[in-house]
Image 1 (cartoon, rainbow, N blue to C red):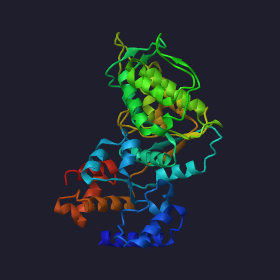
Image 2: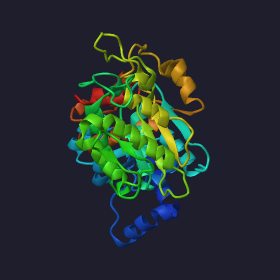
Image 3: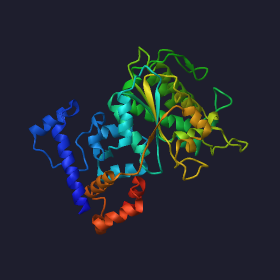
Image 4: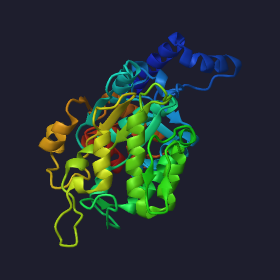
Length: 395
């Protein structure tokens, strides 16, 4: 009965929203609805698929991402379990939640002539910080921003398959395989910009190879992909060019820097030198250059980050606040920033997720479709999105 009552209230709310929705974002969809026979309206799904048009009216509802956006914007960066659902459901849907709506509303009002602001999603483990980041990044992508996405900063601090002394600076170490992989994904996401942005400096890689001033950014990226040995330095050059050109009068792009698990940049590394001593974070070329991009000395964009306990080494599993996961050095480096809390699902969000999974036939066990079964799921997961996913995966 509780499910029926809430579904009735949600249905009333959605109907009311659509009858009053006359903004420019929905005019095309409204025209299509008049021309064709309207489909049954789901209480857990919205037809407003443009992140720029999302508002509090859409909170707790799923919107659909075009498959082309998934391929280009997220060649990497989506959680593994979410990727499994994409294949199973044969569609990509994200829930509209308050944390990402809050950051999107700030981005709409930003004065891009001022230094870039830093936003930090934080919360308990599994509350949906990465998905909030992805929703915000999708907004930037649909608005024509250049997206510089680092899906898991912790990976650069551990599990290094190949570590090489830097040819540019003797005190640093390169990670060529990870750098070349990141450059390939960067190329997929930002292909339109690679033929428009030109370098402001000359870069020398070897005695015979160099990238001249005025070269296309795509040529610089190709250098790192084809010459893996210099890929770490190429990443540094790409980040430098974007930082210097963003917000300049001659530049016609906005820069979104998105880093998932940003606290990993100030954490302890598991990478060892030849003498078995640990490599410090600032000794890694990739980390050193990314930290420089996280400073607020450039304009024309925004820095959107998350905290992560999953890959945070040598910290308590109960830590989740910025000062706990960033540590003193990281907090001082990121300060000032705007913290955005990502809580567990609200009652409405849980109900929406539950109904969506039932609609997708994700919940197969007969008991999981009953009111008592739903209450048991709530008791076991406490409305934590990640825990709910793991519990329901076997149902």
